[in-house]
Image 1 (cartoon, rainbow, N blue to C red):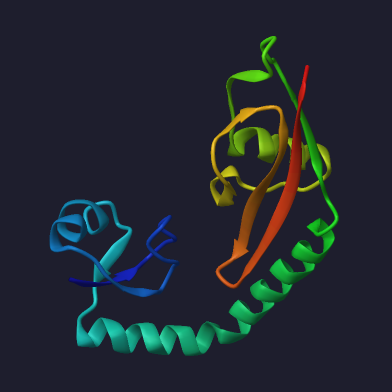
Image 2: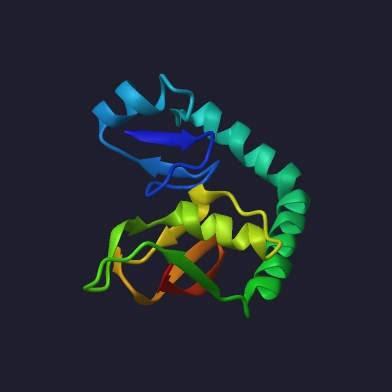
Length: 147
């Protein structure tokens, strides 16, 4: 089933992308929640016209994302958490703690665009990826230390 996304959907695509999904996923989730519409020929023509008109705005948004990525390039975080005697974390470190750490550094980043590689269950050095734009992402190194 071919659909046009109306908003960013994690692990599927970005707004205004044309994607192929299984018909059940499209009919039962994406279309009823307003995240997508069926990609009919007329909808594709409307999308093409809209993208042509918004090309300038999209370029500006991408440039802002590139500038923010350049500012975030040298940032590294240290996250303090409760640790057992063996060095294992109680719970885990996830994108919420990364977003809070970036907010302390002056970067107001939505936690939904932050992806932590692997499970962070022990003290050590890890990497998180911040997807600022569909073509721009930044890797943020962070260290988990005992509180």
